[in-house]
Amino acid sequence: MQIIINGKTYAANPGEKILDVARRNGIEIPTLCHSEALPGLASCRLCMVEVHENGRTQYVASCTYPVADGMEVFTNSEMIAARRKILLALYNLIAPDSARIKGLLARYHVEPFDRLEADPDSKCILCGLCVKACEELGTNAISTLNRGTKKKIGTAFNEPAADCIGCGSCAIICPTQAIEMTEAEGNRTIWEKTFELLRCRDCGEYFTTPESLEHVRKKLGETVGNIEELQLCNYCKTKRAATRLKDGLHLDEYLDSDK
Amino acid sequence: MSEISQIKSETLKIAQKYLPERRFLLAILQDIQRHYNYLPAEAMKTVAQYLNVPLVKVCGMATFYKAFSLTPKGKYIIKVCDGTACHIKGSLNLLSEIETILGIEPGETTADGLFSLETVACIGACGLAPVAVINDEYHGNLTPASLRQILQQYQGGIEDAK
Image (cartoon, rainbow over all chains, first blue to last red; front, side):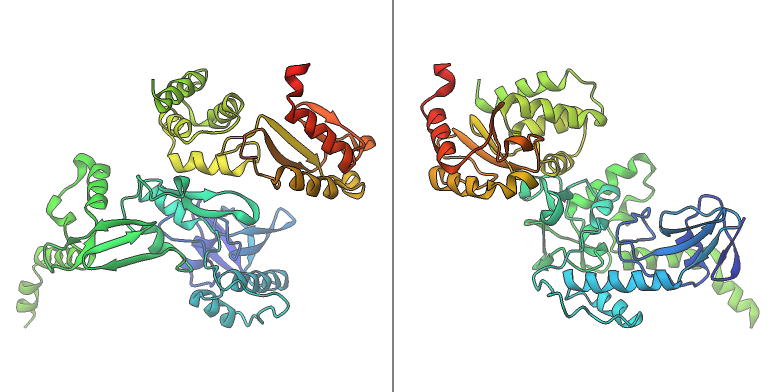
């Protein structure tokens, strides 16, 4: 299967989204609500592209639009560039402190709107990426609440969430750092709930909450290979895996014999 | 039986009319709203458990639709029409009159639990503009003065007299 992006032909696999193919080939499409770890949300609309298919022109969200053989995609047509600018200028108003949005503003030469005032207290662009992350990685502790101008992300009854395991996925994945997560003296506070932090078995750094670890353990069930490695921070986990790989390849022997 | 466990068992009775599948969440919430005139927190927890839906998703749906209320509604729900015709014919005067008499704004309920006030976009009775609906009773061609009289009748227990 092949698709044409900005005049060049690229190989694509059935089921892939336009964004996947574009990014794999180094074609730039900006996104805010996208994470490679999660399915596309089509929420921030920054990834909109122009698609020519079966003689029709459409403007679609590339993060959810599946590729079709022979489809022609334009990531930077006049219409797309204009829409992108408006979107970015608007996002800049609802998340004026976001470095990422500021970066995109500069990257796409967007003049900030001067006739509308930014809300200095607002950080969240309501893209819903945190909700998706909580669904997939956490425990469904947060969701969008209310609607219209009162729409927000929150926990059930706006109370410290009984379900929250303090994994921090929502805060880490948020494109505008709108979710407050603080860590001090071995405690992590998020969504007004405080968790104790565990130390990594190897390096001794705080790295996760016991609740998250328990959640992962339950989710993996019987398939979990090495329980002990769950108790390592990401850095030490990588280090151990690399060491194992090195030992397995007998690199030392290889290097010796090369001399 | 404590109030909480009573809500739980009543809710469960309502919920069990439906199969425990997520697609019935909206219908069950509607039935609970009809039963209690609002959605008690305990009822929402019970439904979440029954359908195996995360509680926060139930809250998400309950706060999304205007038909649901998380706080108890009054005995009489006053719906003041604020459609184009009623708006031009002075529905805002009706709202400020109600605020003067009852001290509530749209979305609020009086402390005695007698009245709740809502605005609706159009009830399709433009010929009677401005209109207010109190429970299922339509009151047309209202003026602040006639509305005041009608409210007094309700305060005096109009339904008991009927």
